[in-house]
Amino acid sequence: MSVLEKVKELREVTGAGMQDCKNALKENNNDIDKSVEYLRKKGVLKASKKSSRDAAEGLIITGESENNFTLTEINTETDFVAKNNEFIEFCSKISKASVNAKSIDELQSQKLNDTTVKDSIVNLISKIGENIKLRRFENIKKDGYKVSYYIHNKSSDLTGKIVAVIKYKSNKDVSKSFANNICMHIAAMSPIALDEKSLDKNFIESEKKIIEEQLSKEGKKPEIIEKIMTGKLNKIISENTLLGQSWVVDQDIKVMKAIENFNKDNGDNFEIINYYKYKVGEGIEVKKTDFSEEVKSLTK
Image 1: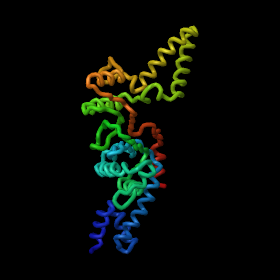
Image 2: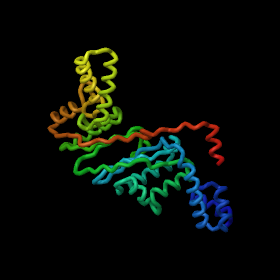
Image 3: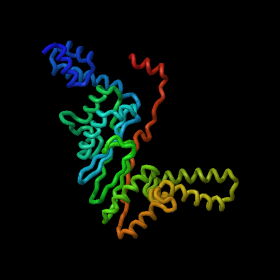
Image 4: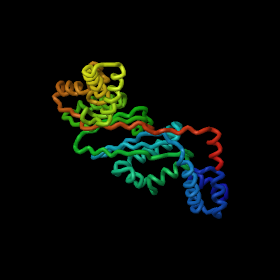
Protein backbone atom coordinates (compact mmCIF):
# COMPACT_ATOMS: atom_id res chain seq x y z
CA MET A 1 0.00 0.00 0.00
CA SER A 2 1.41 3.38 -1.02
CA VAL A 3 1.81 6.29 1.39
CA LEU A 4 -1.00 8.13 -0.38
CA GLU A 5 -3.33 5.15 0.05
CA LYS A 6 -2.44 4.96 3.75
CA VAL A 7 -3.19 8.66 4.16
CA LYS A 8 -6.56 8.09 2.48
CA GLU A 9 -7.35 5.13 4.75
CA LEU A 10 -6.30 7.03 7.89
CA ARG A 11 -8.50 9.96 6.88
CA GLU A 12 -11.48 7.62 6.38
CA VAL A 13 -10.93 5.97 9.76
CA THR A 14 -10.34 9.12 11.80
CA GLY A 15 -11.91 11.99 9.86
CA ALA A 16 -8.74 13.99 10.53
CA GLY A 17 -7.21 16.43 8.02
CA MET A 18 -4.78 15.30 5.32
CA GLN A 19 -1.76 17.06 6.83
CA ASP A 20 -2.49 15.64 10.28
CA CYS A 21 -2.71 12.14 8.76
CA LYS A 22 0.56 12.58 6.86
CA ASN A 23 2.33 13.75 10.02
CA ALA A 24 0.84 10.90 12.07
CA LEU A 25 2.04 8.27 9.59
CA LYS A 26 5.47 9.88 9.42
CA GLU A 27 5.78 9.84 13.23
CA ASN A 28 4.67 6.19 13.43
CA ASN A 29 6.54 4.51 10.55
CA ASN A 30 3.38 4.38 8.40
CA ASP A 31 1.63 2.10 10.91
CA ILE A 32 -2.13 2.74 10.62
CA ASP A 33 -3.10 1.51 14.11
CA LYS A 34 -0.36 3.47 15.86
CA SER A 35 -1.26 6.53 13.78
CA VAL A 36 -4.92 6.27 14.86
CA GLU A 37 -3.83 6.20 18.50
CA TYR A 38 -1.44 9.10 17.86
CA LEU A 39 -4.24 11.21 16.35
CA ARG A 40 -6.61 10.24 19.16
CA LYS A 41 -4.12 11.52 21.70
CA LYS A 42 -3.55 14.63 19.64
CA GLY A 43 -7.31 15.08 19.47
CA VAL A 44 -7.57 14.94 23.25
CA LEU A 45 -5.05 17.78 23.46
CA LYS A 46 -7.00 19.82 20.92
CA ALA A 47 -10.22 19.13 22.76
CA SER A 48 -8.80 20.29 26.08
CA LYS A 49 -7.94 23.68 24.55
CA LYS A 50 -11.44 24.06 23.17
CA SER A 51 -13.12 22.98 26.42
CA SER A 52 -12.72 26.46 27.93
CA ARG A 53 -14.78 28.08 25.19
CA ASP A 54 -18.44 28.94 25.71
CA ALA A 55 -21.00 26.47 24.40
CA ALA A 56 -24.53 27.86 24.57
CA GLU A 57 -26.02 26.45 21.36
CA GLY A 58 -26.82 22.81 20.70
CA LEU A 59 -29.81 20.49 21.02
CA ILE A 60 -32.16 18.90 23.51
CA ILE A 61 -32.30 15.13 23.00
CA THR A 62 -35.26 12.93 23.88
CA GLY A 63 -35.08 9.23 24.70
CA GLU A 64 -37.83 6.78 25.58
CA SER A 65 -38.24 3.21 26.75
CA GLU A 66 -41.19 1.32 28.21
CA ASN A 67 -40.41 2.51 31.73
CA ASN A 68 -38.76 5.90 31.36
CA PHE A 69 -38.34 9.06 29.30
CA THR A 70 -35.11 11.04 29.16
CA LEU A 71 -34.07 14.60 28.40
CA THR A 72 -30.45 15.45 27.60
CA GLU A 73 -28.96 18.84 26.76
CA ILE A 74 -25.77 18.81 24.70
CA ASN A 75 -24.20 22.17 23.88
CA THR A 76 -22.08 23.44 21.00
CA GLU A 77 -20.45 26.82 20.39
CA THR A 78 -22.45 27.64 17.26
CA ASP A 79 -25.86 26.83 15.85
CA PHE A 80 -24.10 25.84 12.61
CA VAL A 81 -22.59 22.78 14.29
CA ALA A 82 -25.92 22.00 15.99
CA LYS A 83 -27.38 21.62 12.49
CA ASN A 84 -24.50 19.42 11.30
CA ASN A 85 -25.76 15.99 10.18
CA GLU A 86 -22.92 14.19 11.91
CA PHE A 87 -23.73 15.97 15.19
CA ILE A 88 -27.44 15.15 14.85
CA GLU A 89 -26.57 11.49 14.19
CA PHE A 90 -24.41 11.52 17.31
CA CYS A 91 -27.40 12.87 19.26
CA SER A 92 -29.47 9.92 18.02
CA LYS A 93 -26.91 7.57 19.57
CA ILE A 94 -27.09 9.55 22.81
CA SER A 95 -30.88 9.13 22.74
CA LYS A 96 -30.57 5.34 22.71
CA ALA A 97 -27.88 5.29 25.40
CA SER A 98 -29.71 7.72 27.69
CA VAL A 99 -32.52 5.33 28.62
CA ASN A 100 -29.99 3.09 30.39
CA ALA A 101 -28.59 5.89 32.58
CA LYS A 102 -29.84 7.23 35.91
CA SER A 103 -27.56 10.26 36.07
CA ILE A 104 -25.36 12.39 33.83
CA ASP A 105 -22.28 10.55 35.14
CA GLU A 106 -23.82 7.23 34.16
CA LEU A 107 -24.66 8.65 30.74
CA GLN A 108 -21.03 9.74 30.28
CA SER A 109 -20.01 6.12 30.92
CA GLN A 110 -22.50 4.52 28.52
CA LYS A 111 -20.99 2.74 25.53
CA LEU A 112 -21.47 3.97 21.97
CA ASN A 113 -20.12 1.11 19.88
CA ASP A 114 -16.57 0.59 21.20
CA THR A 115 -16.11 3.79 23.23
CA THR A 116 -17.86 5.70 25.99
CA VAL A 117 -20.09 8.74 25.52
CA LYS A 118 -17.43 10.86 27.24
CA ASP A 119 -14.65 9.74 24.90
CA SER A 120 -16.96 9.97 21.89
CA ILE A 121 -17.56 13.64 22.70
CA VAL A 122 -13.81 14.24 22.89
CA ASN A 123 -13.38 12.59 19.48
CA LEU A 124 -16.23 14.66 18.05
CA ILE A 125 -14.64 17.87 19.36
CA SER A 126 -11.43 17.00 17.51
CA LYS A 127 -13.28 16.21 14.32
CA ILE A 128 -15.75 19.12 14.26
CA GLY A 129 -13.44 21.71 15.81
CA GLU A 130 -15.82 23.15 18.41
CA ASN A 131 -16.31 22.71 22.11
CA ILE A 132 -19.14 20.27 22.86
CA LYS A 133 -20.53 19.78 26.36
CA LEU A 134 -22.97 17.32 27.85
CA ARG A 135 -24.68 19.83 30.14
CA ARG A 136 -27.65 18.23 31.93
CA PHE A 137 -29.77 15.10 32.02
CA GLU A 138 -33.14 14.04 33.38
CA ASN A 139 -34.44 10.49 33.68
CA ILE A 140 -38.23 10.62 34.10
CA LYS A 141 -39.64 7.43 35.56
CA LYS A 142 -43.08 6.69 34.12
CA ASP A 143 -44.21 4.80 37.23
CA GLY A 144 -47.24 3.46 35.38
CA TYR A 145 -48.31 6.92 34.16
CA LYS A 146 -48.46 8.20 30.59
CA VAL A 147 -45.91 10.60 29.04
CA SER A 148 -46.46 13.17 26.30
CA TYR A 149 -43.94 15.57 24.83
CA TYR A 150 -43.53 18.35 22.29
CA ILE A 151 -40.33 19.29 20.43
CA HIS A 152 -40.01 22.89 19.23
CA ASN A 153 -37.60 23.82 16.39
CA LYS A 154 -36.96 20.18 15.48
CA SER A 155 -33.64 19.05 14.07
CA SER A 156 -34.88 15.44 13.96
CA ASP A 157 -37.69 13.36 15.42
CA LEU A 158 -35.60 13.06 18.59
CA THR A 159 -34.06 16.52 18.94
CA GLY A 160 -34.87 20.22 18.98
CA LYS A 161 -34.25 23.56 20.68
CA ILE A 162 -37.04 23.25 23.28
CA VAL A 163 -38.66 20.11 24.66
CA ALA A 164 -41.67 20.14 27.00
CA VAL A 165 -42.84 16.94 28.70
CA ILE A 166 -45.73 16.02 30.98
CA LYS A 167 -46.26 12.90 33.04
CA TYR A 168 -49.99 12.41 33.46
CA LYS A 169 -52.79 9.97 34.19
CA SER A 170 -55.77 9.33 31.96
CA ASN A 171 -58.12 6.50 31.01
CA LYS A 172 -58.87 7.74 27.48
CA ASP A 173 -56.86 7.54 24.25
CA VAL A 174 -58.31 10.89 23.20
CA SER A 175 -56.19 12.47 25.95
CA LYS A 176 -53.05 12.11 23.77
CA SER A 177 -53.97 15.15 21.70
CA PHE A 178 -54.96 17.16 24.78
CA ALA A 179 -51.70 16.22 26.54
CA ASN A 180 -49.71 17.31 23.49
CA ASN A 181 -51.47 20.69 23.55
CA ILE A 182 -50.46 21.12 27.19
CA CYS A 183 -46.85 20.38 26.23
CA MET A 184 -47.07 23.05 23.54
CA HIS A 185 -48.48 25.44 26.14
CA ILE A 186 -45.51 24.75 28.45
CA ALA A 187 -43.04 25.36 25.61
CA ALA A 188 -44.69 28.71 24.84
CA MET A 189 -45.54 29.99 28.34
CA SER A 190 -42.61 28.67 30.44
CA PRO A 191 -44.31 28.13 33.82
CA ILE A 192 -41.91 27.80 36.73
CA ALA A 193 -44.12 25.49 38.84
CA LEU A 194 -47.13 23.21 38.47
CA ASP A 195 -49.27 25.07 41.02
CA GLU A 196 -49.01 27.52 43.93
CA LYS A 197 -47.93 24.90 46.48
CA SER A 198 -45.08 23.89 44.14
CA LEU A 199 -43.69 27.43 43.90
CA ASP A 200 -40.43 28.21 45.65
CA LYS A 201 -41.26 30.12 48.85
CA ASN A 202 -38.25 32.35 48.29
CA PHE A 203 -39.70 33.39 44.92
CA ILE A 204 -43.00 34.39 46.53
CA GLU A 205 -41.28 36.29 49.35
CA SER A 206 -39.04 38.12 46.90
CA GLU A 207 -42.01 39.18 44.74
CA LYS A 208 -43.93 40.22 47.85
CA LYS A 209 -41.11 42.54 48.97
CA ILE A 210 -40.84 44.12 45.52
CA ILE A 211 -44.58 44.85 45.42
CA GLU A 212 -44.54 46.19 48.98
CA GLU A 213 -41.65 48.57 48.21
CA GLN A 214 -43.34 49.83 45.05
CA LEU A 215 -46.62 50.52 46.85
CA SER A 216 -44.88 52.18 49.83
CA LYS A 217 -43.17 54.65 47.50
CA GLU A 218 -46.59 55.58 46.13
CA GLY A 219 -47.67 56.67 49.64
CA LYS A 220 -50.49 54.12 49.96
CA LYS A 221 -52.04 53.45 53.38
CA PRO A 222 -51.07 50.13 55.04
CA GLU A 223 -54.58 48.61 54.74
CA ILE A 224 -54.74 49.57 51.03
CA ILE A 225 -51.24 48.19 50.47
CA GLU A 226 -52.34 44.81 51.88
CA LYS A 227 -55.34 44.57 49.54
CA ILE A 228 -53.44 45.67 46.42
CA MET A 229 -50.47 43.43 47.28
CA THR A 230 -52.72 40.38 47.62
CA GLY A 231 -54.19 41.02 44.18
CA LYS A 232 -50.80 41.59 42.54
CA LEU A 233 -49.29 38.54 44.23
CA ASN A 234 -52.17 36.33 43.10
CA LYS A 235 -51.63 37.55 39.54
CA ILE A 236 -47.91 36.72 39.69
CA ILE A 237 -48.66 33.26 41.07
CA SER A 238 -51.21 32.66 38.32
CA GLU A 239 -48.85 33.83 35.55
CA ASN A 240 -46.03 31.57 36.75
CA THR A 241 -47.88 28.32 37.53
CA LEU A 242 -48.94 25.90 34.82
CA LEU A 243 -52.42 25.27 36.21
CA GLY A 244 -52.99 28.98 36.86
CA GLN A 245 -51.90 30.30 33.46
CA SER A 246 -54.33 31.33 30.75
CA TRP A 247 -54.81 28.39 28.38
CA VAL A 248 -53.08 29.07 25.04
CA VAL A 249 -55.92 27.40 23.15
CA ASP A 250 -58.55 29.59 24.86
CA GLN A 251 -57.24 32.68 26.68
CA ASP A 252 -60.57 33.12 28.52
CA ILE A 253 -59.94 30.12 30.76
CA LYS A 254 -57.08 28.80 32.90
CA VAL A 255 -55.28 25.53 32.25
CA MET A 256 -56.94 24.03 35.34
CA LYS A 257 -60.38 24.87 33.89
CA ALA A 258 -59.37 23.42 30.51
CA ILE A 259 -58.54 20.15 32.28
CA GLU A 260 -61.86 20.21 34.15
CA ASN A 261 -63.71 20.78 30.86
CA PHE A 262 -61.81 17.97 29.15
CA ASN A 263 -62.64 15.51 31.94
CA LYS A 264 -66.31 16.52 31.90
CA ASP A 265 -66.61 16.22 28.11
CA ASN A 266 -64.74 12.90 27.87
CA GLY A 267 -65.58 11.15 31.14
CA ASP A 268 -61.88 11.09 31.99
CA ASN A 269 -59.75 11.64 35.10
CA PHE A 270 -56.92 13.48 33.32
CA GLU A 271 -54.38 14.85 35.80
CA ILE A 272 -50.87 16.26 35.38
CA ILE A 273 -48.48 14.50 37.75
CA ASN A 274 -45.45 16.57 36.79
CA TYR A 275 -43.96 18.51 33.90
CA TYR A 276 -40.47 19.24 32.55
CA LYS A 277 -39.06 21.77 30.13
CA TYR A 278 -35.56 21.95 28.64
CA LYS A 279 -34.47 24.88 26.48
CA VAL A 280 -31.05 25.00 24.81
CA GLY A 281 -28.64 27.37 26.56
CA GLU A 282 -31.10 28.34 29.28
CA GLY A 283 -29.19 29.92 32.16
CA ILE A 284 -25.80 29.89 30.40
CA GLU A 285 -23.93 33.17 30.63
CA VAL A 286 -21.84 33.66 27.50
CA LYS A 287 -18.61 35.55 28.14
CA LYS A 288 -17.80 38.36 25.73
CA THR A 289 -14.19 38.21 24.64
CA ASP A 290 -12.25 41.03 22.99
CA PHE A 291 -11.59 39.92 19.40
CA SER A 292 -7.88 40.81 19.46
CA GLU A 293 -7.46 38.88 22.72
CA GLU A 294 -9.26 35.87 21.26
CA VAL A 295 -6.89 35.88 18.25
CA LYS A 296 -3.91 36.04 20.62
CA SER A 297 -5.27 33.11 22.66
CA LEU A 298 -5.38 30.91 19.55
CA THR A 299 -1.63 31.34 19.05
CA LYS A 300 -0.74 30.12 22.54
